[in-house]
Image 1 (cartoon, rainbow, N blue to C red):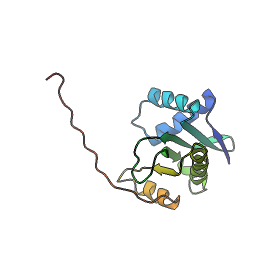
Image 2 (spheres, one colour):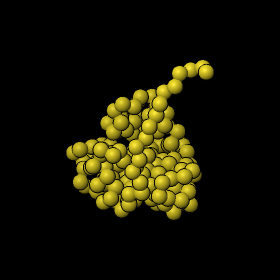
Image 3 (tube, rainbow, N blue to C red):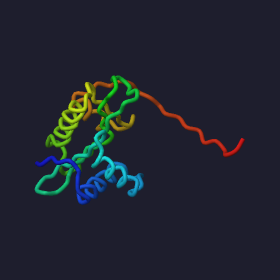
Image 4 (cartoon, rainbow, N blue to C red):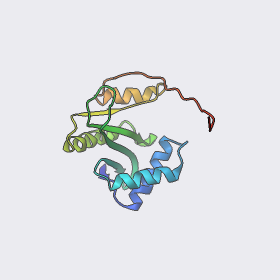
Length: 149
């Protein structure tokens, strides 16, 4: 297994493909912009894990300077982590988490945080197995309002 930071356009496209598998409802162009921006940012990074030269996993992390539930800013934040089914249970995502922790520590963070959907039991189990503790459970609400007065 090889771990590398996303830097080239090829890397960006591979990360976007994996991110699209994690978030199929996302617009590909938006993911491309996000991955491209993160590839050149000091406060964001994306890593790929490769097996036999093939990208099988990615992790996207940012530095959050605002409030993060259960942590103190600045906080390294795992925005997304995903491993293809055939490459799971080999420690790949855990290795990516460790890389993100190292990166966040280098940027002055003492905390790393993440989130998982309430119905994503596998994601929650992964986070616990990676050393995360549950900080809170929330239900988010939104209400569309009409334009004008």
